[in-house]
Length: 214
Image 1 (cartoon, one colour):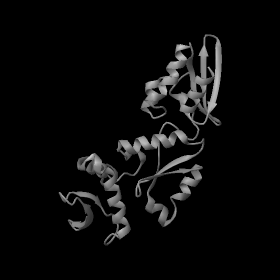
Image 2: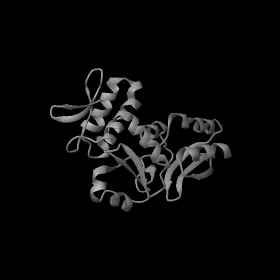
Image 3: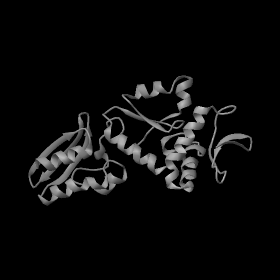
C-alpha cells in the first residue's frame, strides 16, 4: 500500500509496513506507478518477503549507475539469455527505472535512446558481458584449451549445453576453438588430424549442429 515514510512516498507491506519501494519523483506518485510496483511485488511474493526486500534494495535503493552495480541474480541470468541472442554489433540496454531490457541494433542507437528528458528518465545502462561489439570470445579460450566451466560462469553456455560436448567427445571429437565472428559463433572441432568447422548465430545452437553432423 502507498504510505508516507519519513517524508517520502513509498510502497509498504500491508502486514509489516516494511518499505518495499520508495518513490523517486516529486510530489505524490500517480496511480500508474503504484500499480506497477504492486504488480512487481506480487511477482516476487512467492519467494517470500525477505527476498522481495533484497531485490528492491539491490535494484532500487542501491541506486545503480552502471551494469556492474546490478546484483540481482535473476536479472543477471535474464541478461545472459538476451546476450546469447544478440547479433554482432547489437547492444543490450537495461532500464534501471523500469527494470526492462531492450536490444539496440547499434551503439549509435543505444546512445540516441539516452537523449532527451524521456531517455534520461529511463536511466539506460549498457549490459556488459562476454559479448561486446563482436570481440572474439577466444581471447579467454586459446585454441585447444576451451574451458566449459568458465564458459558457464560468464554466461556464454549453460550446464545442460555440456551434453552435446560430451557426446562428441565419446566419438573422439574435441573443441579446438570457439570464437565469435562477424557471421556468428564459429566452432572448430578436431579428431586427430581431422578438423571440422560449424557456424550458427548462438553458441548452444552451433554445438547442437556439430553434434548432429558429427
